[in-house]
Length: 68
Image 1 (tube, rainbow, N blue to C red):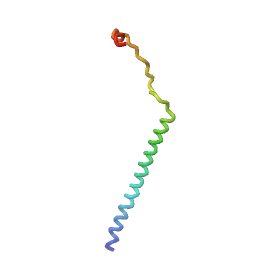
Image 2: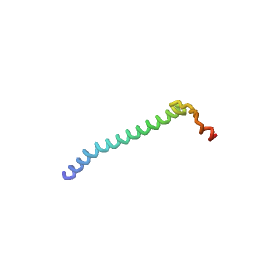
Image 3: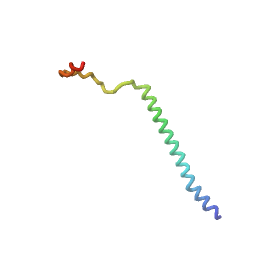
Image 4: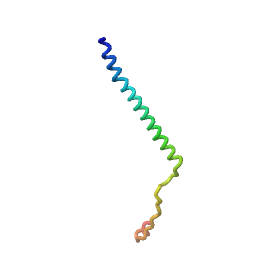
């Protein structure tokens, strides 16, 4: 009887803690796989370059002729 109380205590504390640890690890690995998949698919389906169109800027100062 003296060993039964510590054994039951370990079981009742350890069993949910072990399940929570495994669940947290599985969720973490799932999130890592989702992030890697998003990165790969974003590189695959999106074209290279900026999403904002950048146009050339012309200068009309007198100094710009000096530095040609």
